[in-house]
Length: 118
Image 1 (cartoon, one colour):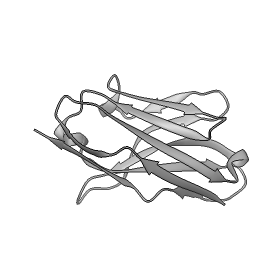
Image 2: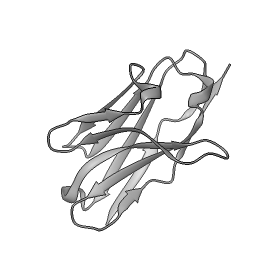
Image 3: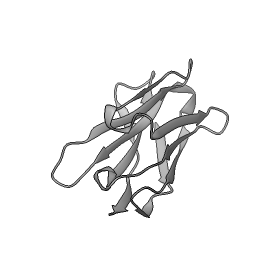
C-alpha cells in the first residue's frame, strides 16, 4: 500500500501564494505518477496537476496553467504544488493522489484545506 500525507494548506489573500507538499510512504517504488485534485463544496473532485515519476512530464488543469507548478523529489518521495496568484475560485480541499503500478487503485491523502479570501 501507499500512504500519503499532505501539508501546507491554509488561508491566503487573493493574489497570494501557498505551497502544498505531499509525502508518500509504503510501496513508493511502485508509484508511477503523483498529483493533486481539488474539491470545492457541492462540486466534483477535479484534477489540478499531475507529474509522472519517470519522465517528469506534467499536466495541468487549464484553470491553473501559468499559476501553479507541480514538482517532485523522487528521493524523498514528495510532490510539491506551488500555487501563485491565487484566486477565490481556487479555494477547495486539495487531495494528493498516487497512481501505483502494483495496485489496481489510486491512493489518496486525507485532503488539506485551501482558503482564498477576496
